[in-house]
Amino acid sequence: MKILVTGGAGFIGSNLCEHLLAHEYHVVCLDNFSTGKIENLLPLLNQYPQAFRLQVGDIRNLTDCKKAVEGVDYVFHEAALGSVPRSIKDPVLTNEVNISGFLNMLIAARDAGVKRFMYAASSSTYGDSKSLPKVEDVIGKPLSPYAVTKYVNELYADVFSRTYGMETIGLRYFNVFGRRQDPFGAYAAVIPLFVKKLMAHESPIINGDGEYSRDFTYIDNVIQMNMLAMVTTNPDAVNQVYNTAYGERTTLNQLTGYLKELLSEFDPAIANVEIQHGPNRLGDIPHSLASIDKARTLLGYVPEYNMYEGLKEAVRWYWNHI
Image 1 (cartoon, rainbow, N blue to C red):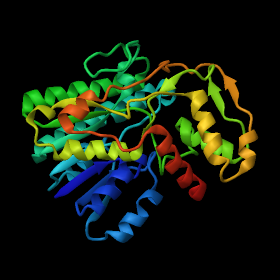
Image 2 (cartoon, helix red, strand yellow):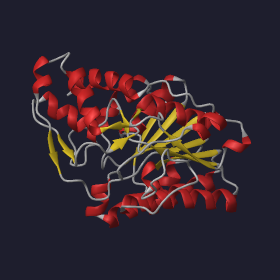
Image 3 (cartoon, rainbow, N blue to C red):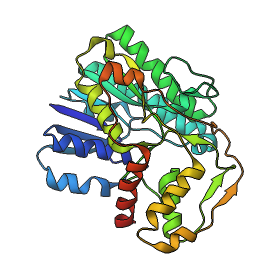
Image 4 (tube, rainbow, N blue to C red):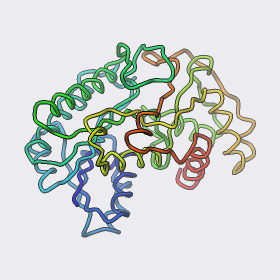
């Protein structure tokens, strides 16, 4: 089978490409390297020269999308501009990539007769909903332009499944972390950013009092969810949106404590690094915790890594790669 991964040079996309290739699928990667890195793909291009093809292109260009889906059986649409702060700074660009680009990919997949279209949705869709745990059919109002774009993705996917008979599955990612997540970008996620700071004996800055909590989700759980979404033969499981998480929450204070503990095994001085606090960040939701009952029931999802076990793996990777 031939599978397209958009955003395949990124953090989640490259891990997905690697997993698919290791399981003998043929893979096409579409990426414009706006946030992805060629370094994430070079080992795969060298190891799987016959099974892996890189197409440099932009999902905002429908021609690029149509070329990428030629002969493809399944699409994993991971390409997007992440980050709430980036979307607040430049909502137009976030909209162009995350909505116009998403629509282009849906059209290209529809026209190519792709069997199923899996896409990266987001826990940001829950917005100002205060209910915990988050259940798929109870959402609030979006709190950022990024959240608006990811909710619109779900609406478009639903319309395409109803109108054109496409099979779509959306995965609402909850604070994914793990190997290859970039610690150096201007909008680096909290775990790689804090790891980088602590390794340099610099103080991470926690937004607020540190009691905001997240359902941090290790990359291998996310890969498992994507694969289950692709291979499921349960008709009730298709044209749905699923929380993609572990199902436990961790405060930022707990997170920094774990990181200091795990990193100090490599460098004891890290245990003494002070933690600073700054103001709360605009657009952030206070607490995030997923119910994974729907994924467990319809897809057979059983996450393998809890947050602490995932952190152990991630810290070991960062220590060897930063």
